[in-house]
Amino acid sequence: RWEAALAHYYRKLRAVDDLADRPHYCDMLRDQNLGRQAQDYAALVDARCQLLVGPQYALLRPEFSALREYSLRRRHSQPAIRRLLISMGGVDQHNATGQVLQVLKTSSLPVECHITVVMGLTAPWLQNVQELAAQMPWKTEVFVNVNDMAQHMANSDLAIGAAGSTSWERCCLGLPTLMVVLAANQWPGAQALQEAQAVSLIGEGPDIAEHLPQAVAALMQGNQLQYWSAASSTVTDGMGVNRVLQSLGGCNE
Image (cartoon, rainbow, N blue to C red):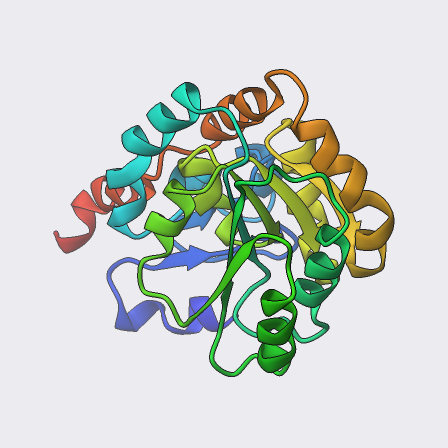
């Protein structure tokens, strides 16, 4: 209703949606979710609406596409877990990061493995995670409020991370991921990624202790890292911003 009410005040309106459960009165609609199809919006928009649907339209910062070639090349030539990235979002309200570290203490990670943990400055469990990191059998560093996340991902061989929009960043760089769902609205995207064999889905926070050890062990067998990397890299190439800008070509007329 408000999109239609504003029609006299704009020339073109672009809407962003990720639910496909409500009508829109707009000229362009973007939904970056994997598994979403244009026909999902067929009854929700009129014929004039241009649909940009799928993770090829995910809006990633340019450093991700810039590092894509480097990231994919190093995974192909070095298929081993030497660097492990743990990132559960900036806040991590329920301390999934701490649960992961506790479980990894008794895992079979290679002796030379280096663990990187990324958190936000306001994360309530930051101090607890820092204390756990100091007790790990492997060198474990905790980084706060990083501004070079793409580089951390590109340099990592495996991620243990939350579902959500950061999934497209990891896929762009072909980073194999053991995924944890931290909110109910993350389930559809997480399941779509698992069906595409782009991630290995651990489950929710309470599932970490039960499922994470065997998931890590499975990835250390054969060419599993290369397999998951190749599958995830097909989800998006990180050029969504360019595609959206190209589609906006007529909006200044």
